[in-house]
Image (tube, rainbow, N blue to C red; front, side, top):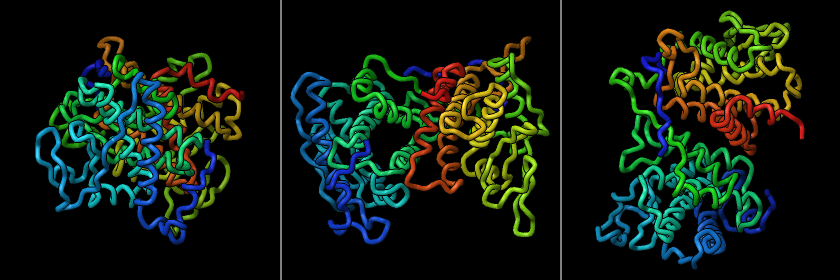
Amino acid sequence: MRRSVTVALALVLVGSCAVAVRTDRASAGEQSGDRPRNYKPLLRIAIADIERFWEATYPTLYGGPYEPVQDVIAAHPGTPLPECLGRAQSYDDVRNNAYYCPGANNVVYDDEQLFPFLFRDFGEFAPALVIAHEWGHAIQDRAHLFDRKSVFVELQADCFAGSWLASVGRGERLLQLEGGELDSGLAALISIRDAPGSSPDDPGAHGSAFDRTGALQTGFLNGPTACAAYYDNPPFVVEIPFSSEEEAAHGGNLPPDVVIPAAVQLLNSFYRDVVPDVYRPLPRDHVIGYDLTNKQEPPTFCGATLTREGAANRVLYCAADQTIGFHRKYLRHVYDDIGDFGVVTLIADAWATHVQTLQGTPGVAEGAQGAELAADCSSGAFTGALVAGKVEVDPKTRKAAYAVSPGDLDEAVQAFLDYTSALGIDATTDQAFGRYRAFRDGFFNGFASCAALATPS
């Protein structure tokens, strides 16, 4: 986030049913104990599964027969690779990458570095998701969809991968989508996003984490027809170049002591505008940091002494005295390792709970899932208004006090994933995926759309 020098900030147009094959991993010699030893058995099944998915889907989507992909090649140093578009290929061409070659009709992936890294950090389903993305390019080849800007081509492939992923989740495929794999899929896409400050006009642009995870969720939620529509109606791409060398040098982050005062200023401004009839501003001294050390007793918050477990890595809201409490060490980690907007996003979620309390939102006092998702949605609406330059605008100059910097929206995605992990939530749940979906709903559809998430059906 940066202090703004201009109002404008462009948005560039640019079932869980078990299946025996997937659950019988140990019998394939793949795992002993809780963690699989390698990703190859699942990847082989995924490749066959993706092929079957497109065999059934392509004719309906594009009105012609589906041509199978000829080969999937695991590349190592020294692996002979076929030519691609008349150019000789070697391992150096695929190092830390994967690609689909239209001329050779094959998928090649780095089996030496990239896939082992994805498996180690994000689990065995992450390599399968990358293969599903490359298969998306095969679909584009068959449907003659490559005559678009690179970023659109890549996001459509992410969307196609998401549509296959949804069919796995519905229990329609050979594989079974296990708990936690949606969140790990988001994390994997974040790891291979464009660097903050990249231009969507770059010939090799793939999209920011916000763009890529959004495309994946579009396919997951709305199916391949929504992905096919990307050709004529490309999605919004939110990639913002750095405004100066100075901004690039500090990654677009405000100084750490400025972040929370800025968040307080902006959140009060936003909610005064969207809920003026009920809103009560929170002053800066109602956003309170606390420390946890081995020698220090857990803090008192909301009239009670917190347990260490209940205080560590937390951002909390107390309705009784309208205060937000946060673990200083944790938010410092978020600032240092994710960025300033990760901090703003977590504070904004607690702030949304304050607003829900004022509004009498159903389930807010009980921490109901619907109310929590509505809070995530409200944080997204705040972020969307900030991106549009509609928060804390000087009536004389018509300039916003702060603007979103490159990478800020990616930091919001990362904050959801990190906070879910820091809370110690079971890794076999997919909380961040749903929370991020609600955040994007608010970002694109505004604050008024969020109330429906909290309303019991």
